[in-house]
Every structure is written in structure tokens, then in C-alpha cells.
Image (cartoon, rainbow, N blue to C red; front, side):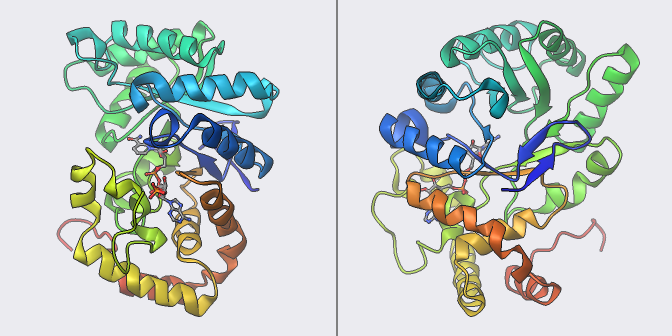
Length: 325
Ligand code: NDP
């Protein structure tokens, strides 16, 4: 395993990490969830990602029970949660002082932990002044309930504003962003955030490296049973990623991966890892074999030579360019 600094912070995070969206407390059994965490930890993964909305809290309960059972030393792993969607009532969502404070306590209770290592604002909240959120995150850090706070899918402008407020008020600024980043979804990460990384020293914990499984290549020749994109209630996701354009590109990428003698998931994940602004790639897995395969992306980094990278560019044909070019 390779470990990377989370931006300019002193925290070391494994270059690959494990997430729980749609899997823990939902798609997979608790036994499989435990098997995934043990496999990940044994392979050197030290970061496990979660959120209050995942399986409506059940994902944190499952992960917390596993951590309690396994009794790993607390200083050998990192756990995150994200706050935004906590329920249907007016003060159960968003980033108000009240919801952030209550959501953090509820997450700690579900996890049965004393503190969270990373705590993310799952989305920006146009109905709460950013200053209110910066203050409550600062307070949670001072109270020892979280160690680092960050954002997820905030614009560069919102992140910059949070930093400016923190500097002005002598508060602790956000440390990292959790954006989507994969071969089909690049613009924000590669263009919009460039100054967030270079000037604010932000780290990143990127999500959906396989575009919800499309980039594993398993949808190339039809629609396999028992996969995420066939799950009930996920029509919106299927419509977004299971497109003819994405499938055609994935088929072409599969040929290239074959030629390089590596698997397509490894190629897609290694491509993310090649970007130095990526602190960790959060993997999703519904089976142990996914993790065992995806972890090999670390071994194939050297196969992604400049020539191979430009062949990938030709296939995906989506390199973001500043507006007006
Ligand atoms: P991916 O895009 O990698 O999708 C993971 C899914 O793809 C797996 O659950 C599995 O689904 C399939 N898969 C993975 N590896 C393989 C393989 N080798 N062969 C075949 N199929 C494979 O990542 P996620 O979308 O799960 O995102 C990762 C994590 O990021 C999440 O768990 C979550 O923690 C975080 N996240 C954060 C978000 C945010 O807004 N901040 C949003 C979304 C995710 P299946 O077997 O069911 O087809």
C-alpha cells in the first residue's frame, strides 16, 4: 500500500480506501461487510468512508459494530462521516449549526466511537451562511469530536470562501474535498479545483472511480444480474452512467487494458491514482474479489506511460479545457 498526505495536513491516508455507499446495511450482508473491511485492512487500507444518509444510518451502525468486534487499534484506521441529509424534518438536513452538531453526535453514537477522523459537509447548503458551518466545524474539532473537516461537491468559490472566513476568524479551515472523479467525470477536479489544491493545500478523497461499476467493463456485453445499476430505485443513476457513449468508450478502454495485460478496473483506478491531487481513491465493492482485484491498480501504475495516457485521452476524448478554448 502507498500512503499519501491528505493535502498539506499531516494525516497519512492509504492511496486506496473503502466506502460503504449502497453496500453496507443495504446491498450486502453484515458478514460480507466485515469480510470487506478485514480484506481492506489486511491489504493496508486505513480509511473507511461513511455518511449519515447511507442506508439512513444503518451503514454507520454496521461499520461501527464491525470495528467494535475487530478491536483494531484506534490509531491504525480513519473513519469518516458526512452531514447533510439526516431526515425529512426542516432541521434534520443541511449545514446549520443545529443539524451539524446533532448529526455528528448521532453518527458517533451509531459508530460507538469517541471521535471521527474526517467529517464532510456532504453538499453545499445555500440556506445556511458558510460562516455558521465553519464555526460549528471548528467547535466540533475543539471539542475533540472530529479531527479534520472537509467538503463534498462544493464549488471552488464556496471552498475559497470557507477558507477566507476561517483565516479571518482564526478558525480551523476545511482540509479536503470529496468529489466525484473518474475517466468520465473530470472537469471540476482537473480545472475548477486547481487553485484549491495548489493554493489552499486541499487534499481529496475521490468517489466513484469506476463510475458505479461501468468502468469495470461488466456491462460491455449486456446487463449482468445482481449489480448496482440493476438495483431498485437507482434508475436515475443507471440513466446517468449506463449510456451508449460511456459503454462505447469502456469497450475501447477494455481493448487497451487487454493489450497492456491488465484488467480494466485496474486501468481505470490507476488512471485516477496518477493524478497527484488525488490523496485517496475510495473504492466501492460488493464482493471481496472486487477489492482483491482493484487493489492491484497500485501495481500497474508504471504501465500508464505518457504514451498510454495519451491513448486513453484519445478514447475518452473529454479532457477539460478552460471555457472559451
Ligand atoms: P465505484 O464507482 O468504484 O463503484 C463501486 C461498485 O462497482 C461496486 O460496489 C460494485 O458494484 C462494482 N465494482 C467494483 N469493483 C468491481 C470489479 N473489480 N469488477 C466488477 N464490479 C466492480 O465506487 P462507488 O460509487 O461505490 O464510490 C466509492 C465510495 O465513494 C462510496 O462507497 C462512498 O463511500 C463514496 N461516495 C461519496 C459520494 C459523495 O457524494 N461524497 C457519492 C458516492 C460515493 P456491484 O457489484 O453492485 O455492481
